[in-house]
Image (cartoon, rainbow, N blue to C red; front, side, top):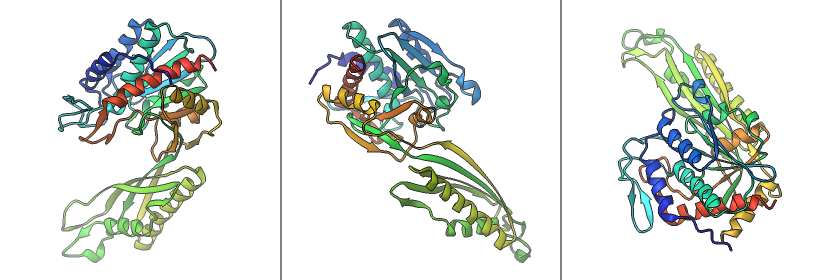
Length: 374
């Protein structure tokens, strides 16, 4: 086992500085500036793209390059957070970092950002042999992977990518993730006075309920899930509602299963509309494709090697969520997810153990140095 001497005090200071900067999706300007400036001070070639112009954000992705021998590897984390993310006040105890309980902490994904910055500093300060490196810090990840989708991947040379963005313990590597389609439907009935002439109306809420009752939702099997998560409709209790909007999704590790589930949900909507004499319009939007990286692939082998070097037992897992790794894989770059060690993300209970923050930075140093020996 190799113990890479990361500067724990500096790492913590960097993390706390990052989480104190609000960076809700589309509002990452200040944190993007800090990260770009930090990398520039270390001598990396830094650029910021115009990805934000595609979705109305205030900052694009940050891209940096560190020269080295051989083919480059890519390391990625995202700069945005979910809410409530304003006025984050981190609390540091002997074993963990939390917020003050009124906001998220933002360890998702700023613990990864801090760990990557510290790893680059260590490699350069200690003149450690390292591979060529491409760093990508994306924006608007939490709202549909928008930064990664707008990234010009033709500007990158890497064929192997590590996306640091998972709640799992450091040492977890996710090599399988589902694809997702979003579903939006507008059901149209006929308005009428609910007390005077309800028989003249066609109740769009009832129509939606009939469609939902027929749908297979929830966990459908070990690879597939589906959900309707938003419903909007109605104007008043004395009006038969003539319009309802539904929004949902279908996910699966197998694209054929996802497509079949989407078709089933669409059929349920059309059947309910036809039976009640209404209409329905459905919009299906592919969000991202599934991926499955074999255990023997070089991106997995290199990740395992780096983990063992810092005393970790590598653990391969599947996830039910999407990430920037889905986008990279869809465009021909083999990308796996790395556990960063934070817990209860997207809640006010979010925290990260100090030991996990330190171990993640060590893993990043190991990854950069191990890649030089490929």
